[in-house]
Length: 244
Ligand SMILES: O=C(NCc1ccc(CNCc2ncc[nH]2)cc1)c1csc2nc[nH]c(=O)c12
Image 1 (spheres, rainbow, N blue to C red):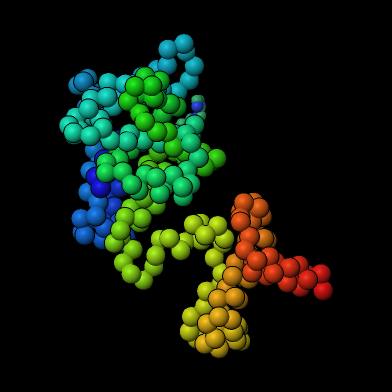
Image 2 (image 1 turned 120 degrees about the horizontal axis):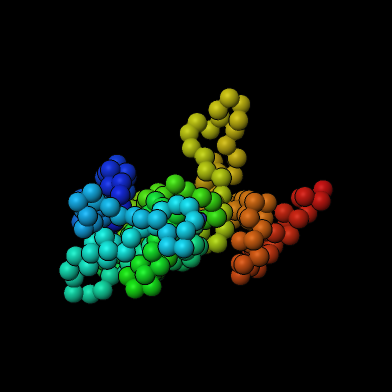
């Protein structure tokens, strides 16, 4: 997969794209990152990429030319997905991550101004994505979030110890509590069930704790779930425990 990123702050990406899972995915050639400063595509000698809005009002608007020129310079046989990171975009989620992970070539546009000239949206961009209802200083961190979640889904990116599929957001439940050595720390013991080696009981305990946590923190996720008989039984047990 090739990922192009157009930004005015390319230096923001250096650490993130060369560390940890993303760095390894690059070494394994699962992904090929290209970060470009679209100011390089400005036609003015001052490298102007924004201007005041027609119709007045505050703030600056990103001009169309530099971005059109930058994206069109990506001579490629197939038209890539051109993703505009913006607060007005489609709310990002794991389903969209899985869809983007299938693409051969993704292009991200990160802005910093009050907005983009609408002709960018209408004629250059295929997708607009927001990562949530809070205001960031720019689209760069948002692009990193999307890239991180897409690259980890590339086959071979996570190695064999963890599988992307099992991820809680894919099962629809929040994760159960995790423990590791020591079995007792400052008097706080690991639940005996986890030391029992009884795998069926451990799986049951983990599912029950996932249900307990999801019910308490994200009832909205629980409401969306197709409950199995076992889940219904465990939820009934949780109800009883709460009413005791
Ligand atoms: O570029 C992003 N943010 C920078 C930013 C913040 C505020 C405004 C101005 N918008 C208000 C407005 N429009 C018109 C007048 N005033 C524009 C851009 C961003 C990309 S994805 C994402 N996902 C979640 N949150 C985000 O901020 C983002």
